[in-house]
Amino acid sequence: MGMTKSKEVSIVLDGKKAQIPAGITVKKALEISGYKVTTYPAKDALFAPCETGGCWSCAVEINNELKPACVAPVKMGQKINTKRSHDYVPKRIVHGFSGHTVGGVGTPYWFKGRHEYIEVACFAAGCNLRCLQCQNWETTFTGKGHPMTPEEAAELMTATRRKFKVDRMAISGGESTLNRRWLVDYVKVLKRLNPDHNARIHVDTNTTILTRGYIDELVQAGMTDIGPDLKGYYPETFMRITSIKDKGLAVRYLNTAWGSVQYLIERYKESVFTGVGIPYNKELIKPEEIGMIGEKLYEIDPEIQVCVLDYRPEYNRVNLVRPSFGEMVEIQKILTTKGLKTVICQTEYGHIGPE
Ligand code: FES
Image 1 (cartoon, rainbow, N blue to C red):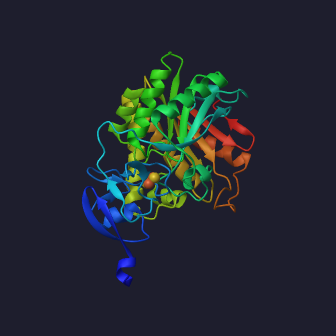
Image 2 (cartoon, rainbow, N blue to C red):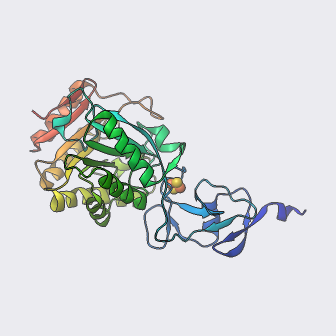
Image 3 (spheres, protein in one colour):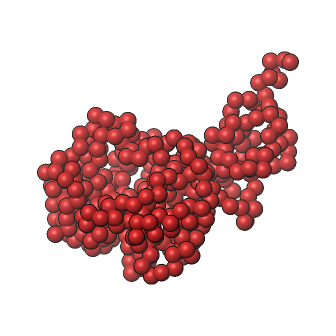
């Protein structure tokens, strides 16, 4: 066998034979064969936002089985089908179905501090950001775990709700919104399995790809609560926090996040609970910028719930120093001085505020 041959494999791509270099991923094979693969959702493109095998947004059929293209290796004789039928069943890796006593940024403040189970939550694997201080990095970046259909995840979530006897059911991450079809179907099934009026379906998100149309779809499916993150006022801050290197992409992500918060209040203030999350650590964002975020949020809605998260040493930023209690009290003051009525701060001694 000649050198050239041993370095190539032949596969069948959407019914057409193709010679592909060996040792690459299916995603790479698609790219070099002229397919459009993107890091921001686009029409007629395969959306591959996490590239760690967690979100399965990039999934294609390989020998009749759904697999994430970003991590699946090309192999000799593979039959790859990228066209999904309208009734295809999406999958995604989801972890950690359990009861929680603290809740997320989208949990209304009056539930917090009860020292009892207030919510059940699960965590979707994969993220489009690369935050070095990620607080859930194993779920976020390793792609480990079993893929579940929306039906399977919603059944497990419903059983977890029964076990912990709560009404709030949250999905966080990783980034919950990366696989749109999966998330919308999951919320729909969860609503069907929990038709009572007390049931609350809560989505926690970095909001970077959550467009207006996507919000509408989630609300129609049954989402009642949302916790969007705003990781900065300036794109440079967003880039520092998330390690996104492409400025154009960072601007797009940040604008999408701010646009979503505005839209959620304008369109859904009466029907969906929105609680915004903002980060604080003096090494990542200055108090003045927190003030600017506060001003902008005040213009959107003075009553909007804002939860400031004290970013701590985690994952690949172990030298970060957790903000002191006093610093968090200062941050709370900055935001309330801007006129915001509902400011919660996470501190080393638990949540503070609103008064
Ligand atoms: S982009 Fe491939 S699994 Fe997320």
